[in-house]
Amino acid sequence: MSIIKEAIGCARVGVPVVHEKMTMYPLYPLSDGGNTDPDYIILDEALASGRAHVAEISEAGSVPELKFVNESDRAVLLVDGEELIGAKQNRILNLTILVAARTETKIPVSCVEAGRWAARSAKFASSPRVHYSAGRAAKVAQVSASLSGTGRRHSDQMAIWDDIAEKMGRLGSTSPTSAMSEMFESHSGDVEQYVGAFKPIAGQVGAVFAIDGRIAGLDLFDFAATWNKLMPKLVRSYALDAVDLNAEAKSGKADSRSPEDFLAAVASLKPEQFDAIGEGQDLRLSGNVACGAALVAHGRVVHLNAFPSPASSKLG
Image (cartoon, rainbow, N blue to C red; front, side):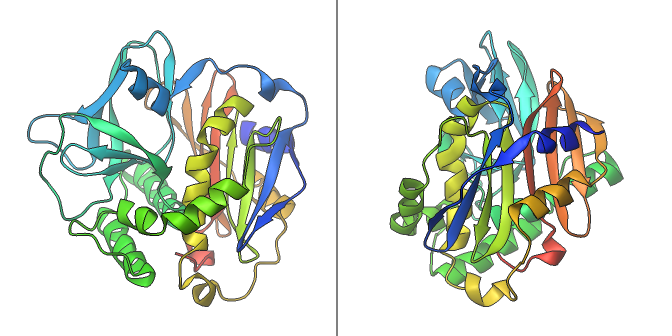
């Protein structure tokens, strides 16, 4: 049995929570193991404390790479899709990474601000959001294809820019630098209503989200404390798709799959395994009905995210 299948098999689907177009199906561990404290800190904590920083890899910079310096005595968890703002242009993380204590490493990223290449700050700050879920679905498939084909963890940068531009057009958002952040900010009232409606539930370690009755994605962590800290960012990711003015028109026929069906589909995928950047193993999941990725370290799935395959999903 693969470790991903085992992790999903150990997750229990709870009572759904609904707000407007979005439904959250909370996930709980079958045992109370998720209630212990993580052996790492998250990106926001590391940057806020000054124990870590993110910068361009050089004065000239490089769009698909940044430098992460961890000066903490603990590992730092960076989550797929988290947005970093500042420096020469805003970026998102291409995958989940666990950076060991007192380690410096290059991290693969994608640009989400096509119209800027000018320094606003020497270092990056973290933002309160994650790349919107439909974009994450496309990116995870792109990174998996790149890793399998070339050994590099690259996205299709032009496709990401095009997708952001199309979504901005649908949402009526404008930005002089085509910054993804503007969509979240200009629709913050609607997005924050979702954040207020979906609160962490005791023992929760993740969730399957559905938009307009269609499965939108899955995020699952090893500790309830990690989910509690990252949940608002992740809710914003799914919420922006829920407020997409053209989402209903693009969604087509409702997806009849239950969250249990989707979890089973993800568990059935045979993972392709690579050495991770930082600690652990990077497992990539690809199939006709689902795609995703998991970071496995210290004998457990630290983070798993999965989405309906872009070919089978029209949202976004």
